[in-house]
Image (cartoon, rainbow, N blue to C red):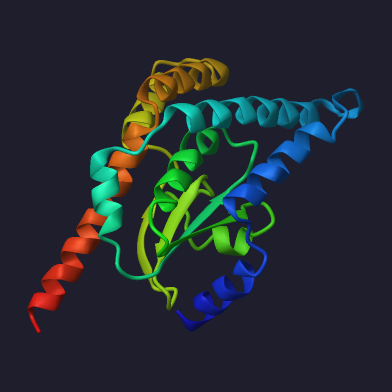
Length: 212
């Protein structure tokens, strides 16, 4: 546990704010000539370019609900919201703007972002079924004790992807259907799941305080 906290503390020195992450994402598109890329590099370039549009759209359309405003306003103590992700990740483009909007509702919340591929040692602390799935939100207290984890996608999105894979659809069709779902959902499944986790933690803390 001590080694884990030491690693996190060290890595957080190089973590991005949400604004810095967005600037990096834009730079990875604007400053690159796609004609000079190989096939794999071009694929990642295209993912990044598409994700910029997804992020922009979600930032304009998503507005935190009244429940979100109420729940997040009840957070009295410092929380670190650590997101492990990459700018080419489609699921991240559909969820990170929601996480950022929620974090922005309370000054006690500090949102930091680490790149998965540059920090495999941190990623390996928060695997999903043994895989380095992203995005991964890890909420920690000021002592870097874990409060809860969320990710890499809402349960409804996971169920849809699993169902489509079982039907034998190819990867690109699964991705297409998944992002159609995200567009219709508008980020509110992500909000709902995070609020439930936050609410459970707040209730636990309240119950703990009443025992003293």
